[in-house]
Length: 401
Ligand code: NIG
Ligand code: FE
Image (cartoon, rainbow, N blue to C red):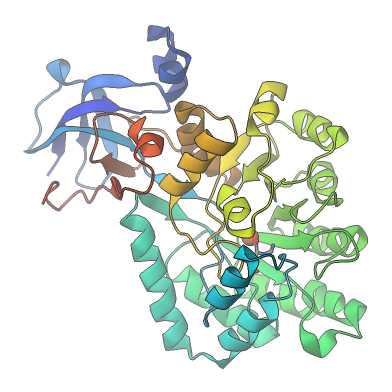
């Protein structure tokens, strides 16, 4: 049964083929179609996109009542597999205690102590929360297990809800290895990585790379992790330049990582490296982290003007940002980082998809991953900050109820 969606006041397609019809740069970037219709096949694939007046017939029709439709958000950076509660750490931060990554050990202890079913329930709840806010694709990292068995089960639980799983055994050095850092790096790059890849549980590998003084991994350690991951056939992702002017961005660009995430503290040479890596390495900005850690926001405007590929994601995690909301990230990007609403939406869909090796357009032949807004245009995502106007479009359920 094919389905014709009508009553779409504004459709964001992300389709460059539709750009030339627009003089407004935002409308061109988003490939906007006004008074649009979409036909979706029984298998959930887009069959036709265009003005409602030209729409073909379909077996069923659904009128979206003048709402806007956007590509489903792609949350390309999350840490959803964790147990425990760190709200007190957040409260302390708001009165001046800085974030240094030390709290990760608290989540590691709680996660190790949780049963598989508890982790499954927590992850399921978080993914449902995301869908209810318009996210239809999610990447999930391990990184709160930090033993071979606990990393494997974290990835197994993540795999039950998404193919986009990332092995983050190199999140921090766990307490039992505190005086044996290099042994832990050997464990991550040796037995852990081998077990993860043998079981086929990860698409990517990630490392928390920062200056040597932090709880994270320095440039040399990070290089070892990324090179081992690449040799094992995984795509590369990097947590870089979050806490200071670390080597993460340079390393990610040099090694051809799909994404370097955070980019809070950038030197001009980091921006140059990102410009040179355009088309390969996406700079994924996570403004919910700056919000929740009271850090300076990265200058997305300068990155875009320099020609860097910029994506947006939530970084939903118990420490630096327990927000699963992409609309919140979009609102912060517009209010605090100089992005236009169109650039922010593009960054949270097309660009974040690219960082996962995916496409996120609304075009024939592609999956109908859509979000519907309780609003007539995408501008409302930032304009109505804090109001839950976005949700994933369930193709077989009524809209508006
Ligand atoms: O992306 N920076 C490293 N990892 C997470 C935070 C982890 C935590 O504090 O629990 C992040 O910010
Ligand atoms: Fe993260």
